[in-house]
Image (cartoon, rainbow, N blue to C red; front, side, top):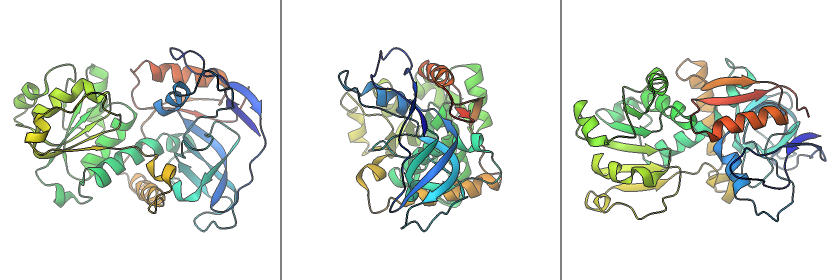
Length: 340
């Protein structure tokens, strides 16, 4: 099959340099599906995979976690999908990614593609949606029901990015008062369009800005950028017995104020279930199916902001270059055939 990957990591200051290669077509067994890749979206986890690679490691690396496509073959133990089904998913870091003609994936990580979206629009959603969903409902203990969140508020740090764009929608969908951080006019507008009730600037003190909104603090914080940069600000505005979730590891000690407030601090990594084959791994299949129903009901919309075609080395490098700038809004998606 055709694929786009790299052998050497290359300089971390630049996007990965992808090579067009021919590799053996995988054969699905057990609960694995073989999916014909129709569209992929790019994520920071992909170039972080490159950054974590040893300079002396010259093994083939194929990244690309978000995929939307069509099942072309199913393993003998598969019960959730069959040939011809349209699917979307985010895969796992312990196997090759989806920058390839076909891709092998465990069916328990796969959801039915929303019927109302094309493949590119669907490919923008899986990784970010799983991250936000697990952070809210598994890590922070937020209720799925609007009435269960009455009077509760959440601060989303980085509300206009890939995860933030879907996190604001889900938070609003379950009845939370949503405050998103954004520093540019276009990111503020995007956050408001996707469900934020208010925006504040993450480059300024949080507490003073929240007071101008009539808020003494927030019940939940979802941090989508470098958590160390915002630790002091978060400690000031989280309410006593509040909860904070970060998608990046803290490198410095937590603020002591979190202790006095009995604050819960949690991490979210959407790959945990697939990396450790947890007993509830199928939860990602279930949540992606529920999300697809929300999308088809008009309750959540795709976060795709840019569509590129075909899937080739030049377009991938451009897409990752934009992502590495730290100034992207929403998601960049590539669709079409794999080309050199």
